[in-house]
Image (cartoon, rainbow, N blue to C red; front, side, top):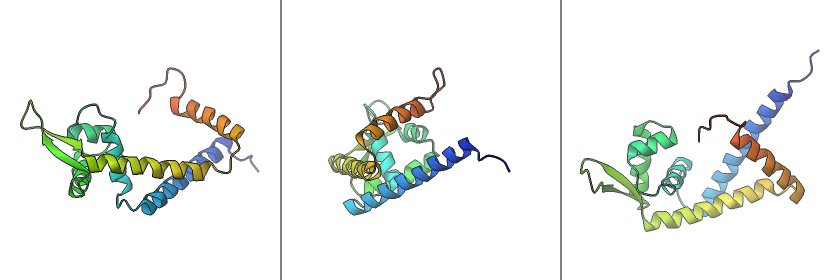
Length: 151
């Protein structure tokens, strides 16, 4: 009989945690009454990180999806008044995506929902355990020194 694969067990734990995080975040989104899908939420949060309104192609690249997927997401967010398509001031063939005032309100509520989800997930941990986890997560997110970061 062989010993269990420690890296395989860790990988499975990470995958289970990721699924749990997504489930809990989805639950908190539903409770918030925002009527927004996780994919729309991600696009809206991504938009908020741009200094100037991006093109659809920029969003597709950042989200690592095909442009058609971004079009569908923008259509839904535009229908709910959370984003708007705006012509580029220097090239009328280019359309930029802007967050509206309603979209900014939704972003604040999304932040609260995500924070509540994180508090729920972390609630079993002591302050010391949270500190250790934070350090470990920093190491995993940043990767090995000199490693190329995808995000």
